[in-house]
Length: 479
Ligand code: B12
Ligand code: SF4
Image 1 (tube, rainbow, N blue to C red):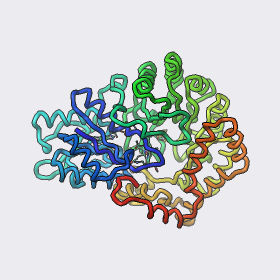
Image 2: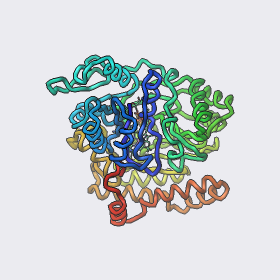
Image 3: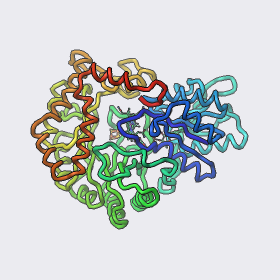
Image 4: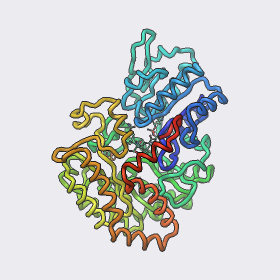
C-alpha cells in the first residue's frame, strides 16, 4: 500500500503527520505501507507514479487539505488510470466535504475524520473480499454503490486511546528533508508532532476545529506523551519538536506532569506549542521553559474586546497582554497570530492591534486574511460551497470577505499588508530584534530566515506575480 501524499509546498517542508500516523497504525495491524511525500522531494505527478510503480501497492491513499484538493484529484485520477487499484482520499478537505470529494473522478472511497481505524477497517474489508461498492457499516467512510449512488456512512467515534497509538512512522520519511517554520526552530532536525486530538475549546467562530473538523478531544497521558517525544529523539535523532496541537495547555495538572516527565528524561528536545491566552500563567510557562520549551504561539486575532467577544475567543486585550508578559517573564518568546478583515472590525482595529502587539513586545507577529469557514454566517452570506472554499486558500494574499464598513477588498488587502509593515518596520521592534539577535546567534539566523519569508510582504504586487509565474514549474504538485 502506498500513500501519494500531495500538499502545497510551504516555505518549509512539514512532516505529513496525517499520512505517517495512518501508516504506523496500518503497519501495526500487519499491513505493508510506503509514504511518498511529493513536496518534500519536489517531485511531480509522473515521478509519484514512478514511486508507486516501484512499490506495487494493492491500494493507494491520497491526503489533502482544501488548498491542494485539485492536485489531489489529478493525482488520484492518474493513479486510478495507471494502476487500477482502489484509490481512497482523506485529510482535512475530504473530512469537511465528503460528498464533494466523492464527486472526483478517480476517487473510489473517502475517509472522513480521523483516519486510522477507518482505513484499517476499509483495507481489511477489501482483503476479506468486499467490493468497493459494499462498504456499508464502516463508519467514517463514503463510497459509491453499484448503481453510482454516494453513501456516507456514520461518523466514526475513534476507540483508540492515544497512548496506545503507535508513534507516527517518521522512519518512512527522510527526516533531513523536513523542518518547522524558521522562527520556531532552535535545533535541527526539527519535526512536527501531535499529542492531542481535537480542540478542548472548539468554539471560535472562524475556525474549522470548532466547526466541520471537530475531532473528539482527547490527549496522551503525560508520561506516554513524554516517552513518545523521547522515542522520536532516540530513534530518529529529532532535536526539536513543533507541537501542532490546537491548544496545548488545557488544565494545569497535565502540563505540569508532562513537563516533569520530560525533565526526568533529560529534556530530549527543545519545543514550541500553541497555547490559549486564557489558560496560561507564569507558573505554567516556567515549568514549560524548564522542560525545553522556548516559544509559544498565541492566537489573539484582533486586539479589540468587542470583536473578540464576537469571535467567541474568550479572550480580552488584558488577558492577551498578561499571557505575553507571563511568557516573557519565564524566558519564552511569543509568536502572536492575528487576522485582518474579520467581521465586526475596522481598519483601525487592525492598526490598533499592531500598536498593542508592539506595546506588549510580541516577538513575532503573523497576520492572515479572514477566510469564512463552512458553517459560519459569512460563508452562508457569500453563498459559498466547496469550490469557493478551495479557491479562497489559493489566493493567499487576496482578501475574500468584505466586512461591513470597509470600502472594498483592496482596502482589506492594503490593511493586511500595512499591518506587516507597521509591525516589522517599527523602530522599537527593530531595535529589540537587533539587541536579541546580537546576544543569540540562533535567533539571528532565524530572524534572517524569517525576513526572507516575509520579504514577499514588502515587495510590490506586480513583482510578486512576475516572479511566481516565471518560476512555478508546470507539473509540480506544489505551488
Ligand atoms: C501543522 C499544520 C500546518 C503545517 C503543515 C501542514 C502539513 N503537514 O501539510 C503548515 C504550517 C505548513 C500548514 C500550512 C497550511 N495550513 Co495548516 N495546519 C496544521 C495543523 C495545525 C496540524 C496538521 C496536523 O499535522 N495534524 C495532525 C494530523 C495527525 O491530523 P490530520 O492531518 O488531520 O490527519 C488525520 C485526518 O485528517 C486523516 N488524514 C490525514 N491525511 C490523510 C491521508 C489519507 C490517505 C487518509 C485516508 C486520511 C488522512 O487521518 C489523520 C489521522 O487521524 C492543522 C490543524 C490541526 N490541528 O489539525 C492545520 C490545518 C491542516 N491547516 C490549515 C490551513 C488552512 C493551512 C494553510 C492553507 C494555511 C495558509 N493560509 O497558508 C496552509 C496549507 C498547507 C498545505 N500544503 O496544505 C487548515 C486546513 C483546512 C482545510 N480545509 O484544508 C487546518 C485544519 C487548520 C484549521 N483548523 O483551519 N499547516
Ligand atoms: S481557534 Fe484555536 S481555540 Fe479556537 S476553536 Fe480553533 S483550535 Fe480551538
